[in-house]
Image (cartoon, rainbow, N blue to C red):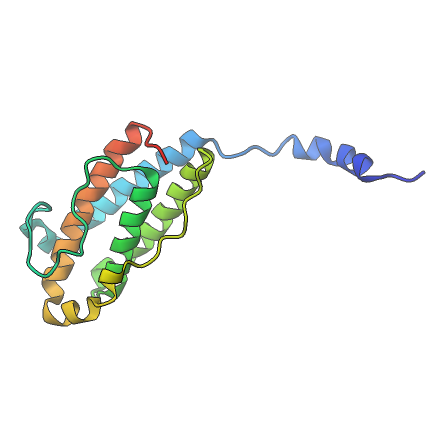
Amino acid sequence: MRCGPLCRFLWLWPYLSYIEAVPIRKVQDDTKTLIKTIVTRINDISHTQSVSSKQRVTGLDFIPGLLPVLSLSKMDQTLAIYQQILTSLPSRNVIQISNDLENLRDLLHLLASSKSCPLPQARAPETLESLGGVLEASLYSTEVVALSRLQGSLQDMLRQLDLSPGC
């Protein structure tokens, strides 16, 4: 007897029926937990408390500030910018935060794909190509301002996730 693709599929069916997709609620909870963890890591770095996330610092305008309404794609773009800034900093304080941002972006991609709106890979904005010159001139200020604004952005993202943001 010859068994075609249908027979093979029927033979695998009992095994496939035990596989469950990760519930989207779990992904959203993991995303919120990771955001809280990153905020805690930023709080543990003592010198980040000295700058308000709303304060403007000349020469550091490329670091994103707070945005009123965040979609999943805007969250991803914002995190990509922060990730690029943090990976450019030589400080050991930000290595784990940068890794956490990568994981957070992956979770946002899962949330977006669950809503049938896959996110495009974020490109490095042109304004960040000249980051090297700014870092040489004001390394400490860049780190403080970036972490402070990142913390504010993450807290906004946490609030937006409760409202189930769109694509």
